[in-house]
Length: 416
Image (cartoon, rainbow, N blue to C red):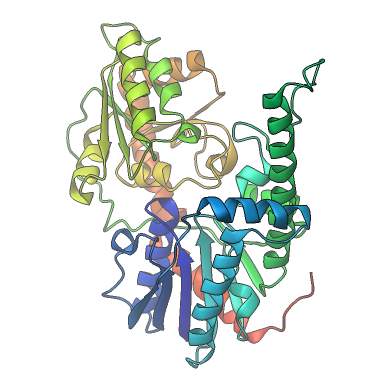
């Protein structure tokens, strides 16, 4: 196949998944070219050795004051805001090049800004989308719900600050309704939408009114090998330093473990909010937890940590799939995870990890079990490697994505 890949991703799980797909498809002889924006993280994706060319087109989301005023007028008329208009124009430019390139299929991926990408509207070849997750800001409380009403006026309507808040809310809700409308339209423009878990497929159905097709990811054991190194008394966390990854919950949980056996928390993230990291450091000092944040470390160091830690504590909120627990398992590292989202499809309780409720007390007890019960830790470690080798291999994941793209080419578009 001659495959055109489109993405607007930064560092993180989405980029790791796309890297895996591009690498595997290229190794099977498929020709690949990539289109992306100047705000995407092409360095983190690092696929130059597998693709014919990467096309980076200029793109900006910087908004001026005059754009904000104009967006309010457009919102009243239910018309797209400046950011959407810029994305539409950017996608038109990408599509013009893709449509003229003689490709068999478009393999679109998520957009860091809008989640559901706009590129499908302008492509006239078969098109498949691998969607990490719907736009959580529009469809979930994360943690606030965008549709939640303002507090009642309670006699304060005459106050200028309340009136300003009232009108700003009207503009915000109008803009959100337009975004929802545009994202649903985007969904309907793909011949096939692929998702990473059954949990994600349910979210897709709730958000866009139609289901997708589960196409599980896998783990490249060459990138995440088991090195059989001695385990050390520290716990790992993996995920960007943002609230929804919940490193604060990991700190609060470890604080409940007795001081004599309380492990250090080494949290590794690709990117983060510096102000939030500062708050995490303050929280850890207050609770007596040795917290070591590590950002954008070399891959070799990540592998060493996964092979020497005693446990991965996975606290992400409604993670759609979660590559980190399987990467840890490939390195023989047991996982203690919140029983939510796609993690319930990868971690089997008391087999390759322990699943718990989102309660610090339960997390602390589970981590303490892994730290103090060597027989349990050894059994979880053996089973972790076994389950990756049997079900979550790199080769099987490429079989799935290759079959999905071939079927996209061979079948007529299904009306949603």
